[in-house]
Length: 212
Image (cartoon, rainbow, N blue to C red):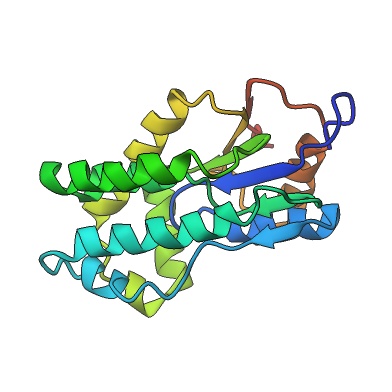
């Protein structure tokens, strides 16, 4: 990948729920013989947050922040390529969506302290899709705990991702529009995406495959 400049040592794959982050991260990790970092799971507060129970937003967010920090902190002196299916800064994106002003002020005190101690990726791959596509994929996946996620929340998160990556300059960035492709279920689409990822990526670039 990116042979002209040398392959990236640390790649983060990002995007909203059910856009294909984990699938692509797994494929890249296998192809690069890289260490895989998986998004923290089993958040004990998440189901109650999706059910809109009072007070669950802050508990959910703080749990994710602590878990992501512990994972990323271990990568400071990594000696093999790394592929993660999240970007640490993403945590703050969700905090701004889910927390009140008072909760956010407290959250930010922890976030700033932790951010200084985690590495920055060489390349971020942002997988985007329209809210309508995300809703369809969410229903198709059929995960029980995710069925309580409202359409309004999906739309809010998708908009937050768009705003965040429009301004993102922390590393090289490839924006991949997945609304018209489905590399999870289509080998043709996957091959097309992997071919693009084998080419140099500098600054912010876009992968917008045209329909046949």
